[in-house]
Length: 221
Ligand SMILES: C[S@@+](CC[C@H](N)C(=O)[O-])C[C@H]1O[C@@H](n2cnc3c(N)ncnc32)[C@H](O)[C@@H]1O
Image (cartoon, rainbow, N blue to C red; front, side, top):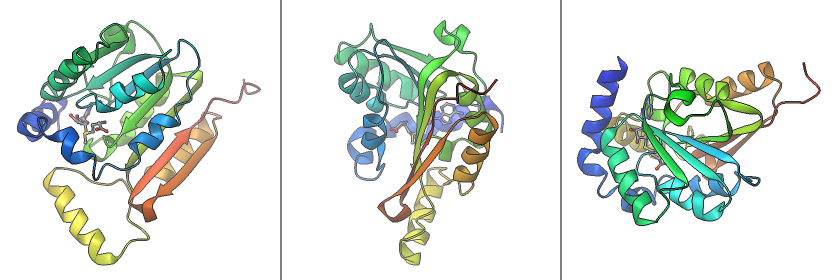
């Protein structure tokens, strides 16, 4: 699917949903607050969310990490409109920059006027990005050597009853969501190749997966 077709699809999914998104998703996009708590930013840190949607995470993260600057990218202009309004409502315009773009191939210098970020996070977006492996590579490519990549998304429900898995899977497919079974393996490989540590934590019996690719080992060339 081309980026333009995917953008149209995402706008279609979220055109109406965006108005009830934050209210409804808080019950099932689990682990997002845990990810935000774990960003552990230093002074003047730069934090990018890929697939930022309504801006819900950026607003919470900006409150939780008052000395950081935030950047958000999304392929859906509809979602970005909601994000823009909520960032204005919170008075965060000076600390948050939003951009329309594709997480699988974006130019941070053009969109955000910077080459790299101290923290990049991706929350429940990889499961909606067909070429999600490329989004992971693009994220790692935009990460500073001392920076970390944080990901939360649906897991494989590996320790939940089979019927629950089947019902959830069918329901998610209606929203073009496909939990990425190979996520942990890919991140582990990418982390090893770039000399970074990798941490993986299944949450709620595998309902969600939380993963962190940490700072590069400074002793490596
Ligand atoms: C389920 S929402 C998650 C939003 C937010 N991260 C959260 O945790 O609430 C997925 C978001 O990913 C965006 N998205 C999907 N494919 C994308 C892509 N290729 N590049 C950037 N954003 C994308 C969608 O438009 C949508 O806003």
